[in-house]
Amino acid sequence: MNYASIFKGRWLALFRDITSLFIILLAVIVSVWIEKGSMPDETAMFVAVVNEDTGELGEHLADVLLSENGFDLRLTDRDEAVKMIASNKAHGMIVIRPDFTEKVRAGAYEKLVETTIMADSYDMNTLGELVINDTVKIWMEELIGRKLGAVSGIDEADLQAFRENAVEVLHGGSLLDVNANLVADRSDTDEEQTFSGLRWYAAFALFYLMISGTWMCAYGSGGLLKRVRSKGGNVVKLFVFQSLPGMLITYMGLLPVLLVSGHPKPVQVLAAFLLYIAASSAMSLLVCALAGSFSNLVFLAPVVTMAASLVSGMLCKLPDWARVWDYVSVIFPGHWFYAAILQEDHVAGALVATVFWFLAGMSGSLLLGNRKK
Image (cartoon, rainbow, N blue to C red; front, side):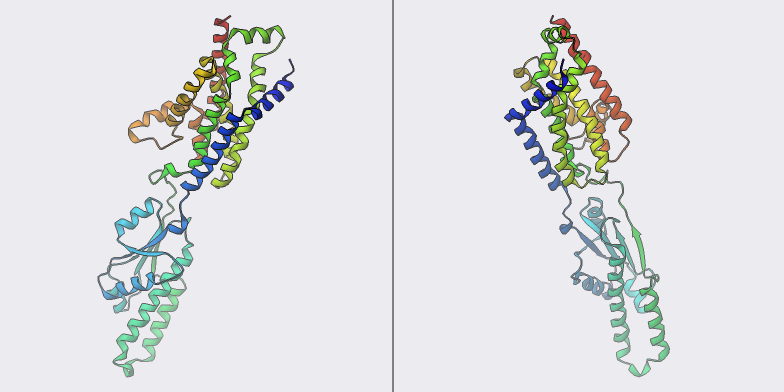
C-alpha cells in the first residue's frame, strides 16, 4: 500500500470538508476570545490603601497617597484588601499602622507603614519610594507646624536631627516593613481563569478529531480489514498515516491560541499538545469504531468530548466534592495536558495515557472488525 498517497488523499479530503474546517476555525476563534477574556485586566487592578491609624496624620497620609497620579490607589480596610489580593484583583496594599500619628509626633521613624505587593505587579522599589516620599511630606509638615509658634526656639541640633532621619529613610532606612507576597500558588484564587483558552481549544480539538473522523468508522467493520490484508497492508500504519493530517491541522490551530495566551513555557505546551492529540486520535478511533456510522457519531462525539473534558478539568475547575474525578481522569489525555499548562509534572503520565489509548483504539477497532467479518 502507498501510505504517502493515503496521507495526501486524507489531507486533501480534510480541506474539502467545509464543515470540519469550520469547526476547527471556530475553535481557534472562540479559544482566542476565551483566552483574552480570562486575562486579568491590569488597568483595572489597584493598590489598596489601609489606614489603621485613628490620628489626623494617618488620615492626612492616606489623602496624600490617594492624590498620586502615577498609581491606582484606593482606600479600603485590611480584610477587603487581603481578599482582593488573594483573588488577583489588586496588586497589593499599603497599611498605615495604628501608631503612625503617635510615632511621627514623638519623632520615631521606625515601622510606620507596611507595604505588601505581589512580585509580578508594580516594581517594589517604585512603590516604596512613593510611600517614603509622601511620608516625608507628612513629617515635614508636622515639624514645621509644631515649630511655627516658636521659630526662635528651633536650633541647629533639631534641624540636623531631622535631616539625618530623613536621609536615613530615603536611603533604605527602617520606615517600611516590606512584605513581598509572591502569591506563587494561585490554586486557591481563581485557577479556572488560568489559560482558559488553551484548555478549551484542547477540548475543541478532541471533538474535531472525532467528528472529522468518519473514515475511522470503517475500522469497526470487517470489510476494511479484508481489503487491507488483501493488499498486504498494515492496519496500524494505515491508521497512523490517515490520522496525521487531522493532527497537523489541530496542532497548527493551537499556535495562535498559544501566542495570545503568553504562556511562559510555550515549547512545553507544544510538546504536551503533541502527545495530547496523539492520544486523542487513538481515543477517537475507538469512539468512531464503536459508533460505526456518522449518524451515530454525531450523537456520541459531543457526549464523549464533554465528559472527558469535564472530568479532566479542562472546561472548568472541579468542585471539592468531585475530587475523585481528578483521580479517575488520569486515563484521559486532557488530564495531563492540563498539568502541562499549569507547569506540573506530566510527561510520564501523558506517555502512559498515549500508549494506553493507542492500544485501546487499535485493539478495540480490530476486535469489532473481526466480529463483523
